Amino acid sequence: MVAKSVLLSAGGTGGHLFPAQALAHELRARGLTVHLVTDERATRFSTGFPADDIHVVPSATVTSKNPVALARTGWSLFQGLRKSRQLLARLRPDVVIGFGGYPTLPPLWAASRAGIATIIHEQNAVMGRANGFLANKVNVIAGGFLAAGQGPFGDKIVATGNPVRPDVLKAAETPYQASGEGMAFELLVFGGSQGARFFSEIMPQAIALLPDPARARLRITQQARPEDMDSVSQYYRDNDISADVASFFDDMAARIAKAHLVISRSGASTVSEVAAIGRPAILVPFPYALDHDQAANAAALEKKGGAQVIRQSDLDAEKLSALLISLMEQPDRLALMAKNAKAAGQPEATRLLGDLVEAIAGGENPLNERGAQA
Image (tube, rainbow, N blue to C red; front, side):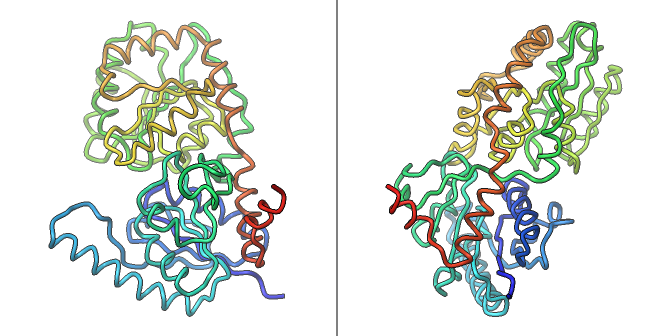
């Protein structure tokens, strides 16, 4: 029996690639052939991606209304569509799955026009633009936060949750251990796969306002953009604060598990991984997201009691410092948040999405079965 072949397509950021990576592990463990198609940006995150091969197609993000810029974007997408057709003709996948981002447009569009079964996975609580464009063209929409029946394409949605990588599931086995008075306090600060300048600016200011005993307890792990690393590291060195600062950590799951508190943005992968591992978090949604998806993701975890959400416009060094002191002095509150976050996690999401993909690759239509059960 010939193994079923699956083509995964994801934009070139960690938020899109990490759930695709989690699914790839699952599908290969089931004996399926897995290929990945993405763009040039993915090199940083695709090392070790569990695929039989990785393919790069031209793409571009629509970021400007300038006619020249739009023409260039259109040309890149056209080139990507042509190359995607060639790739599909050579690989002949049984199903193509997109994980969002404009690089998914050419292969998903080409696959739908070629009559190949297609799925998009929407990680966020609000559908992104690329997935929104593809939603009426694909067979099924797998929802990370979206529920069946929700929104204009609700009849296509199958709720699976957001897949998390094996290292996240491994980290989730580590129970939360509260940090009592006088004990070291592990603080993890990151802004998603691309870092966050806001945290590089506000964290040193907030920590400078902490009383000496609280500052002495801190053990900080902070992700910073390359251009901010020197200044952030220098501050911590000058103030004798134990800190590990880097632009990217390839063992982020283990660092989340080690943390007593996480301060981060609220991309879908971040929220899903923090919840799966079960750690308390202060979430600061990226305020310039076009669809306000991070705010919706953060609200979902806050509603379950696993996080505290603060708008960036409402957060300054004084407020953050006061909140840190308060939480460091309330280990029971942090332990409860950790418990609530864990309860909100969806560790079975990878398996559920794998079941969906395998069913569709085998010619089944889960939407028809759902209708028959209604």
